[in-house]
Length: 465
Image (tube, one colour):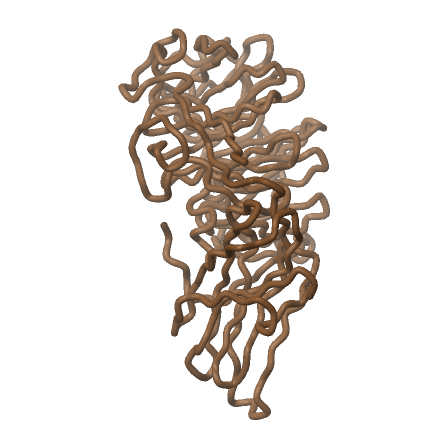
């Protein structure tokens, strides 16, 4: 897991309250610490939860106490309310606190605090509600298709073979589509587990003209998306283009020249990408691309025009409102996964920043979980998907599957950060080896492209009361 950085973090609160305050000494040369509250709550049950914060500056004296304070009635809690101190830290760093003895079905207001001799500072307030009866949430993992042996072969379930599957998407009927990256093919898994090949002849290459699916060539295909009509869109990583597999079985290029670079404009004659790794489609047929090595999110309209909606070629971590007139684009670092909701909001797995970012239709970029100062929350996020209730499912490529609920509660469902292997099972007993793509089917099934295990894994969320 990445080590939190010594940095002043731009932060977005989970709650609507933004009530940071600070006591200061009358001598302006002396200052209290500065602290931010973790923007999500972890592992909420009926009586327990976990939260914490990041001290971004110790001020002008050593830290004497740090932790979280919370209340069920005071919407701006202080250390005079209930508090839970953490192990004392003396440098700018992150801390977590296990909260126990909470009241079931109760709303809490919480914020981080840090104290030195010149005063106590508070982060922003976050809110969470305990469950009535929930005691734990985890994921039960099975292998749906493929095996660790790797290779190429159609068949049923674990009799089929893949070679480093990277992207995964579902159509309206619950069929899965897999970018079988080292086989340079796009595969299909029916709901009964039958695996077939949709496109690709296995050669690493590129067709400059429309080509029958069986004769098409790809070069390390990555992310996938399926539109309402059943057309499949492919982030053809090595070719630096976006491809389409039509329902008529024809593969064609929809954007990109095939030459790595950066350029907006007409999709087929001017636009350039550099290592596109993920693609998503909205209800209007617009495509969105995580252009990883350009550190940008790009848009391809149904009319065939490519534009940049957020990000700059220089990697970074900046939120804000994108304004193309004055050249303000916010910034990302290796964006690697995308999903679009019904309202047109785009959610980005920002791998290099250990963050989940949001881009609204009004071009406002925010962080909804994680960030450089809270790297442990989502680790190294590479894939992201959303269910019909607005819950997110995220792959941390270091070895775990995460759920971020619509209430901004985070659960580690299966696997463990920085642990690799292969094992079915529940919770931390399950093991992955570089999980990349993830998708949720219309029926609610969660499926993961387990890259280095050459397998497609299924995760079932189990809530224990």
